[in-house]
Length: 438
Image 1 (tube, rainbow, N blue to C red):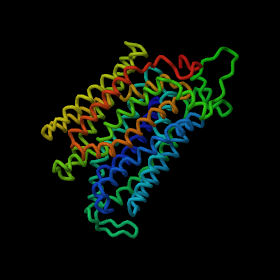
Image 2 (cartoon, rainbow, N blue to C red):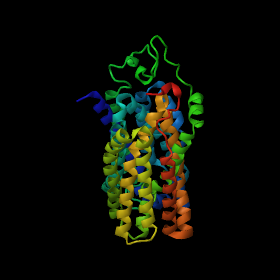
Image 3 (tube, rainbow, N blue to C red):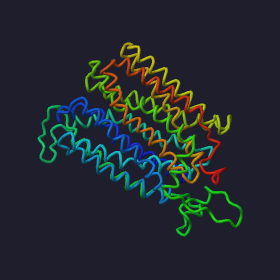
Image 4 (spheres, one colour):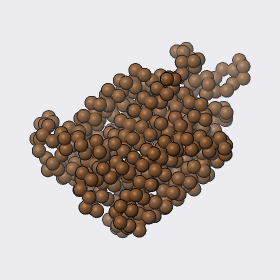
């Protein structure tokens, strides 16, 4: 098996763990709320807290990965977020809970920017969509499995004591031990990643210690010329922040994530208000998110195929715009308050269409990022996850004022803005002219 497939596979496993640790909280949010006596507003703040620090640390962590190598940054990130996940099992109230959720955002923030850099270095341009889809698919599989696995663990671990806390709880499930189990599993994945992943393909001259951290293959120079020096963090940020394309990229992800984050934050609450039992809620959430896994598989093939036929300008933007409009249509269906099974089906189609477009989003950042691909994806992820941080707070407030009808109408409108932003993206324009053709 080619080594690049192994690198992408192990990175996908890391993404799967990351999403398990991220999404598991949504299915446990109601039991945690009961045991810690949290209000609805406090619960919404806790659900959004992770995305806030996750967003704010995207660019710094992406720049670190670009400068010092994705392998070390990502391996350290996996170990750190695993420790934080385990600490979630020891919280005593709202303050300590929101603190660990904020820390989880910090520690997970380097994962996707670093992974994007790995994919860029190990994949040819016409493979970036497929390879990116595999890594993103790992995350989506983790997100889909998380509700089901978490529900099983939380019930199966009832009776297992943890530190000074009693075995019994108001909620009747053992969410504390569940977080500890996930944390221990993550430390094993961190060791696996460090053992099998390298920053550069073996034949890349940049893999030698004496060379600059950017691979020579990422920079096209005249014979005898020296590679440009690595950019500082401020320089990278300046390059990104002055490009209109990158603001469109950020707006796309900000609006997109306001709507999509519902699936990993408030969907269990939506089902609870529809009188769906906890055991069925986890199965429904898993099914909806599993539809996204199918979309991710197909999306990687689609984006590479469309790029070959339409070129870099429309080959990246058309799939993004088409999928965002499809998601808007599904949210509009749910906003009409249809029967529950229709709403669940529409949400499943929304997850599928959402993830059909994600490989194009990743590939766009890799196409234009050049030596700054980690920071470029980090910029989009930063603004996107600010939207995700806002999502549970905003949608909870809108739901309280106008019901779920108003909340899903807002989600549909956000997807329309995302579609327009995606259509205006131009992947033929690199961030740095020195990176043209990379």
